[in-house]
Image (cartoon, rainbow, N blue to C red; front, side):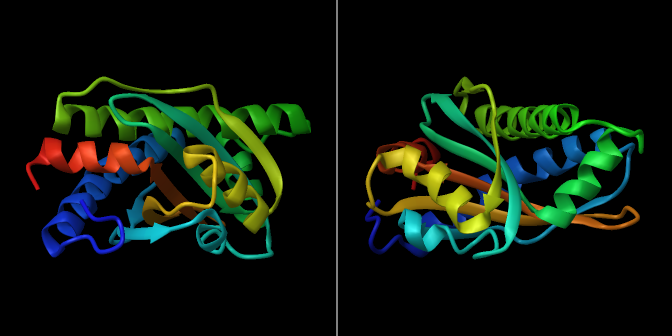
Length: 199
């Protein structure tokens, strides 16, 4: 894989990986939200450095994000990101509308991210016959750009481009909850994944 210019076949393969992984993640999120429908956008495949990727979640808007490192044959980061308002709506749904302190709200989002990431990685693992595991979630609140930069910078440790698989979701709740799923892969992992898929 040439990271500067992926072929159409490689892009199609990565989009299919994102579609399968994020589709299972959306189903897991639906179950957590009491069976509410969760619609998923067509996944995008992007080649971006941390600074460029940082604009994906919402620029300078307040946000909440939970991310997990991926271990196994693939190395990278899986991230669940929401605007501040969507994050609060998701917390309320996850907690059944019951009053809760900040620690309990943080714990609910972290656990949701862990379940969503596990579902995504399990699906990709079945596709590739690889055993993929998520780390303990890291949850932060703040400016979206800063949160994405912090997560993406962990992947390569510098400003080098990484492969980002991105999909947006919207849950049919009141109020609606929308957000993003980001799967950020190390360069070598991207090459290994494409080789595994035969493209």
